[in-house]
Image (cartoon, rainbow, N blue to C red; front, side):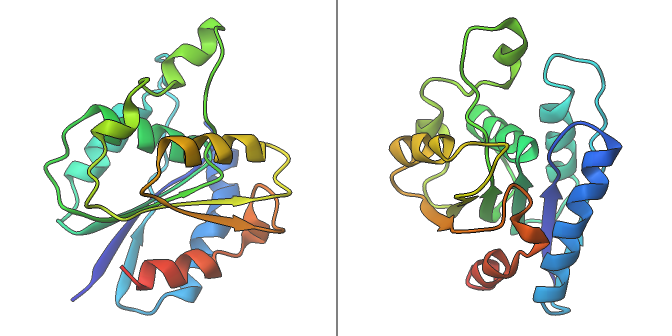
Length: 181
């Protein structure tokens, strides 16, 4: 039986999509043919959250049960926001978030990206949740990872020494954890 992965890219442009395609390729090369990966291009539709929640909702609803969700950077933060704001009807086998920003501040532009103050209480505690962060990430500071540790005590946290924001385009560690789900 095929296992299905849905991967949400970071950033808000086609350039970001193409950069994260290397992450998807690494994931594919580290998983066997039992897995399929769907990698949609998320289009910036000009709405305050760039249309991410709606696009993520549509992509999840079109998939079969037992989907594995993976998000990188901005895609990870919007996936987490969506999962904490909406009651999901699909069965999710696992959630894997990479280099996830924790949006905060009072600026108008950041408001659509912020999580609800009690976001963690709205997540399904039965779904395995894994967060990954490279200590040398120069785009999303490690302090964001630390904030998530405070809010998500039941999640598994994986701190990776090197790899930068793009994990050196090597998702071997994540692939191994996906295989355990």
